[in-house]
Figure 1 (cartoon, rainbow over the protein chains, first blue to last red):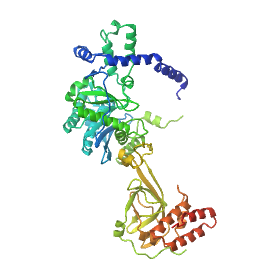
Figure 2: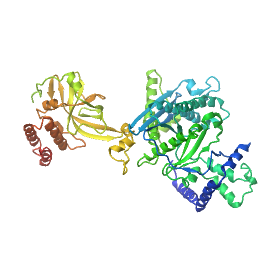
Figure 3: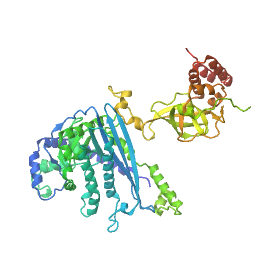
Figure 4: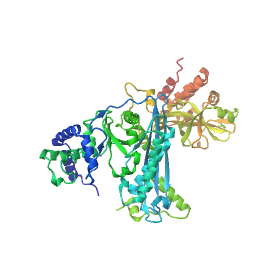
Length: 391
Length: 215
């Protein structure tokens, strides 16, 4: 039945009213003041001395909270390499269980010898050992979040292979976090084992090649720095808000911080091309990243705040850090009339995407291959009723 | 009408190999084909004569009727990229990926064929094959094909992006140049146009104005 827009439009008005309230503007200014005044050393001491986990993910400033760095000029000749992936997930309405992963890569070289290489590689997975972790034991299906992690591993492999076509200096970029959040679940050790090792192995290869690898997160939803300010503001235990000794104004600010995203905070601090100082992510899975522990900074790419993540061996090397900062910003300047977004990531995405027609072709290939062997491809009754809707 | 055959030297395979490969067919039909140009931004000239092999020593002739440069993905459109400092050719150095995500296509309408050792000015019996190369015709081939002008009827009967009379005028200009500005041939072509379009003054004049030598 059609969506009834009457009640929804009222709720839209209420949401817009809430998002644009004047009080939020004043509290944002207070937050920016707090960013400039908060003591990073004191916060680092608090973080290292606390035994219990914090109720929120808190970033740790490597140096300062509020230093700003303008974009370095890129070298005259350089390459940017990117990889992206997409998948057709297992479909419970299909008589056969399979999934498809397609990875795309783009290598663009700028300067005296401009060039571009775009390619994709797809694979259909159908063997038991490919569909399940521990296929003879627990049979943990590779689907949902796990499939997303597997795709991230394949993207990193593609990114690593594409390096061979790049001219140095180069930066390797991927879309989406380097932090494999989904592996933090303690009840699935075989998932972590299966996916983390190959991912780390790819990062090892980048380190050996001396090529910085970074991830680009557009319109980041992170609250890690804001949460750090919340901890900084707190006089008691951040996990026990019922025992708060802050003044009413400070409680309002703390409550506001709970709703604020880092991108809004830094939008008022960073001008075009500027990056923030560096922060360490304290996500639990990073304990297993070793020397590839992830750090990040925020970057004003011209109209948007992006989050750039990279292993600490990149961020601790001034030349690599400047290269990542300079080339990522340079990429976003080349978007033309598009919104600022790295063309190399855009092209990698275009290579990776599997459109509806292509999904149907895969289904058709399977149907024909089965028919050739005397088997009819019949999907579930529920799915068939959705595809051929009637009254 | 008698068999429209002409005596000509057969085209050898080595001559075919010498003529330049300029595109690959991606759509084909009885009346024409669409090809992707080997070089971005450089389709063969409007009205020029091209050929494609259709089997053994036989090939079909076509007249280039349209050209365009776009993204092969219909969901992607060109967006402005120029700035005060970067424009025209410099945009392609600034955005190297453009050469990989754009292609140039051209359309050709079929106007004849070379089969069984003779040039014939009617539609070939079979459409050209997908993925076959398109070759530009040498000046020699253009001269031989254009000795008879019966195929002008085929050109005037086409319906495409470019009005048929504009296409015919473009083709006559191309042939005139390939024949070394052969004034006698141009006069014959003009008389043929007058004869074919005598009942449509506007279209006739469009062609005649379009083929004035001017030099």
